[in-house]
Image 1: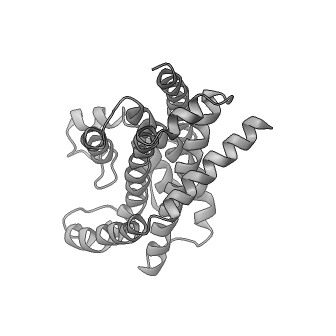
Image 2: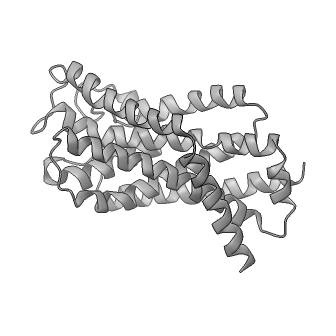
Image 3: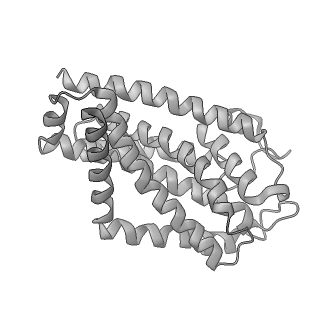
Length: 255
């Protein structure tokens, strides 16, 4: 019961922290809208994709981008908690490091998922064709993507001592993950450089975005990998990040 109570408390704390940050919520509305309207309009005639328009292609990619940027940024909570002494208090409590890491990860993942749902709402308002019930099929995929990315952000933050350094490292990690994932442009066409296709295969977000397109676009999209392969790869990435994250939090407790 102690572990479950601690897990719930940490989850609720991270969720409340997000909900009370009005500036971040407003930004979560503006950024996806700019991508889906301005970026899609500018590149619709330049990127040809058989059977769909560029805005349809971009939509799952922007969901993936929103999850990536939100999830990775959530790692900043570790630095704040360490700065104000909260992290030290929970690390010396009679709760396992796994529970502490899992509680923070689940709370941050819930906040990231809420932003992903906001993007779905924008897609509906912009008239992007998808069934309303598609959201319920996409949610498990979004959760899988978010778990690993939030864990990665928490791991990075656990090794960094300042907000400035965290911002620089986060950007260094975010941009390759985003641009190599195929979120903005196809990475399987004949005109795509071989090195880019190879590099994208080592990007876990590539498999997440491909799975989202498969679920959201259905038969209109020809996936790079079968859905089950994408799910397994993302799941293995999540598992690896959770194991490493638990170790990283145990390491913090020994300092």
